[in-house]
Figure 1 (cartoon, rainbow, N blue to C red):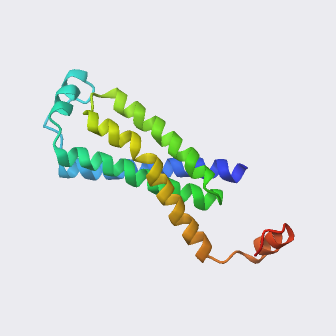
Figure 2 (figure 1 turned 90 degrees about the vertical axis):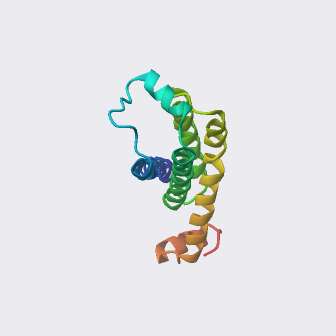
Length: 151
């Protein structure tokens, strides 16, 4: 149980890191206007009304890659897909808070709410493939055989 909780927490941390890195790369490609004040809600609203498609796409790609990476790490550490599901729920809550904080276009709401769960599932599926291809340590193999779950 603790391994699964640790997996979900680690997956969430990796997801946040990936989202931040991809969004930082997006800001290099699509920089904010000079002197832009992110603490001014009126300026943020005006920017969101005219957000370039490429900049919006990098945000959505960041959410997708973050959820997939988080799902992968959560499943590897938790040794089950349930930590990826918990991590995806945390990402969905964080994405919803992010969307509510600024006037994002409706289609970004749509992608923001639909992307995290399937992307986390993809990450979890990739992790299961990696785990299946990796032999178990001898102590784990003996414990699984003794528990009747195979080796």
